[in-house]
Amino acid sequence: MEKEKKPLEKVCIICAKGNLEDVMAALVMANGAVMEGIEAKLFFTFFGLDAITKKYMNKLHTATVGNPAMRMPGGLPFPTLLGALPGVEAGVTAMMKKGMEKLDIPPVDEFLEMFTAGGGEVYACKLAVEMFGLKKEDMWDDVIDIITIGQFYELADGDRTQIIFT
Image (tube, rainbow, N blue to C red; front, top):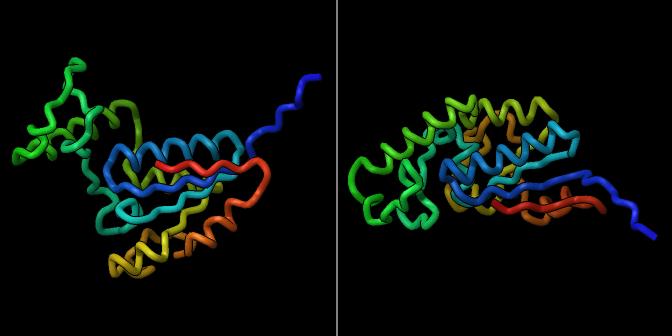
């Protein structure tokens, strides 16, 4: 007898890195979920908080040092040492943003607005907020709350829930 498939009902995505590519990965997955009618929650912690901190959210950079998957135009491997040279990270970030713009991928603040307009929820990690000396007023206006990891796990309750870590 074939087992009945049950659809995913909820995703809770943890974004712990503040580089452009990891934040965008979280936003793409979260927006994809709400577009598919799946309940979605984003939880930003540690350096991922930059994505929802007003001062930094649209100033994220592409990680050039220590990124073994980094590629140059044409697919050639990017020598990590080059990423440490002055101006290289800014140049790579500009190229990445230009490529995203060509694909009509919105900047972080607009992507977050799309997510919440679709019913998604955004939370900040209490421990990380306190560690970095931030306050609720430092956060993007649509951050619902600053919560503990225990509260995040309560939000993730349910039989057909996935927790995704980016």
